[in-house]
Length: 412
Length: 150
Image (cartoon, rainbow over the protein chains, first blue to last red):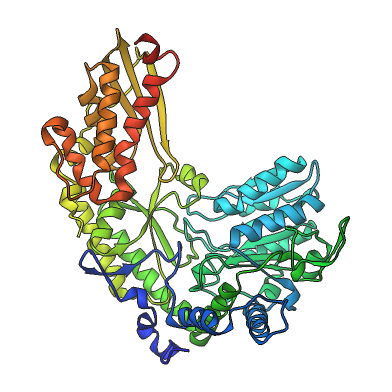
């Protein structure tokens, strides 16, 4: 583990823990503001990956040799780290997937095909990432269910009256994002879950934009399913997590068939392994799970109190500064905002904003953010988005604003 | 370092601010929709073909400065050209955009279109410069369009 990895006291020094941040692009110091797409990785995560591949690399749950035991121990310890991180009851409730998308598809396929039928309803919101929309569209088409989408208001907040109205006895599952990746909106998921539970529906929460920025307690939320991807949480790509309530996961059929997920196999039939293995067919991303655990250890050492306080300060500065930029319009002005800001500039396409910002060393995302229904809602083809992580500082906001001033000079 | 002024040349900025031949073409004989799903850019190219010659051409849609300027300059470049010539120009234009950056571009052969040589420095933006051309090609080759009248 790296010495000096951030603590509450030295969050301003956390930048030094991330090797990729110490570079120049186009002759300028890199200002990385695309954290909602993926975050940079702290040295502790990179070292955990290297350590695993240099010393412990073997397949899990198989051999009796030392390396296999180490790999298995590391992989299962990672599961325990995730369990504690989410405050799940049991490691049986933690399924490793490739990413949040795969976790959602797992639930849509396994839970959906088994428990959603003709005439049933699936509820999503108008602010979902495509990953939490398309699998439900596919499910509804497969089983003859109806997809109901809850609209958002001009601020980019969920229409709570519409949400309450759409819930009914045919609602089987509600799929909602914890934090919108395109608007920044933080949804009151605990309240939404309680409402959905009153009509007997189950709730899947997409926590991909939440887990790096705020503490998540799946028991306090009373979530039935909670998914996130590792790479937005300072972990490697290719590793994600599905938390599922044990009674639900137990009742669900396997998603993928193959090795590791079986108890007995004959040429005619098979029986399934217990949780969590039932949902982890094939050799998993062992190194990824170990790297994700290192990332969780890293943020846990710093603490979410410090991370949230710091990021709120930086994001508030960004919102304030962007409001002052001539011709700039924020897309989404939620009362509770996560660590990102979406915006457009009069007469200037977001791609041009992105290219010009990049030439100043400032990396932002431009496009529809895999949330085309939101773009339609606001009547824009795309937005520019600055998204923040624990290592961003007020100076990064200033660099962004300087870059936008250059955009205005060049394109205005 | 990629030079921003190579990308956003005055001619491109001018055509972005004041796109030429922007709007509907009521008497079009062919048209096509172009869409870049990655960035959400859309362009509609409509042309009136008579005797295998592009007599009029207009475009609508929304996009970045590169894609809008490219569409605008394209309409100027292909107007009054034979369809086959326009398609051949697109092939050469595409080849120019994928020429390694060190190699010079035959500015004379491309006329105003040579202004897009700077896009080579920005590989992510090449598709912006070619969207309108792909759309034009689709319009020209569609059934009922020009290919049949050639």
